[in-house]
Length: 254
Image (cartoon, rainbow, N blue to C red; front, side):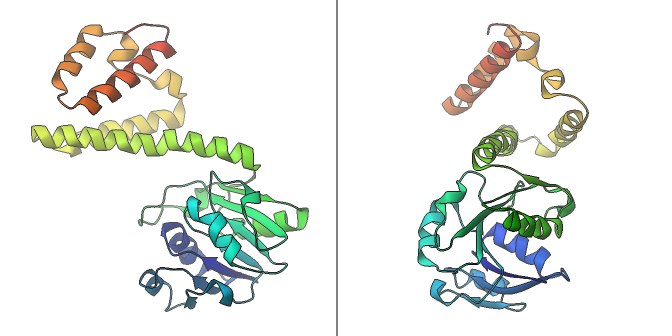
């Protein structure tokens, strides 16, 4: 039985809480966070609190707070010789303090308040300073997912950067597409089969081979017509930047 304390009350903390609280090999001892209202989500199944100096005894302390707060919060806690890990993709392991045993427990997934369809496929990137702690984190991760990887801080930072392109920027493109649909009073739902097919292609071929569209075809007339249709300066800038990047990738010029 692994005894766990969660520090944080955001989307990642809620995800971990949901999977930990129903697992027979995990005992969720406590959730600690500054937002007392957000702590209501956890209080029916475990002890909650807002005082970092009153952490209960546990085997692993998981710091699931925003990146900018990791260093500050870890300085406020003292977990003696227990294992303290954070869940960030971009912050180095050694940014932590408060104990001599440090680690990273990074779920490579997007969390926006809606539970992932299948947690078993979420890659967990773990890091630790010694083999014993690696084993602890592997055992914990395997309680959630069958996809567990030992990845260094530097490799994890690069992976997180790639994830921003694959997820955050892609989602922003969906948002910009939805704005155009809203402005023209056409249903955004009309694009969803296309979005689904795009995803399916990436599952079966490389992104390089899957690329289509006017920039890939070097269809300059369509590219110029699209720029004339766009009225908002930021939309024009994004369209031009991405089109030029595609042209450069395939050895053509806009």
